[in-house]
Length: 161
Image (cartoon, rainbow, N blue to C red; front, top):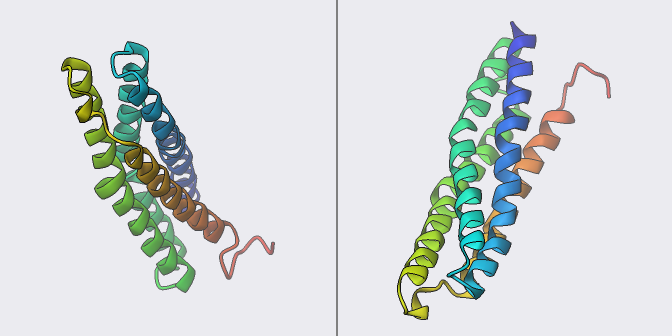
């Protein structure tokens, strides 16, 4: 059962966190493009698509820690320091994504749509929004990279590597 949990955990991490990482990283550039011309339907469509990818795969990403706990429990390592560190970092990444990145994207998409619908360019989000989302996404990605490294080189690894 441990191998099954581990395989599902790794697959969930690749298939759920990977798309969020890529789409969230692409979002600020797409936002900058939409900011220059809020009337451009392709720019708005790209922005909507990237935000939807982030939302959907973030929800699917909830399977990663669930399967991680199942794997850790079956391995008997729930009290290990490397695992507790990984849990804290994962919670931090989830908080950044759920409380800062996704709402920031949502607000930016709404502002672009408002600018496209009305004549007021003042509703277009400024460059600080794109920079802030770039920074937050970078922190999110760094946290996930750190968790991945901890999972690979964890102390007491049975691989001997």
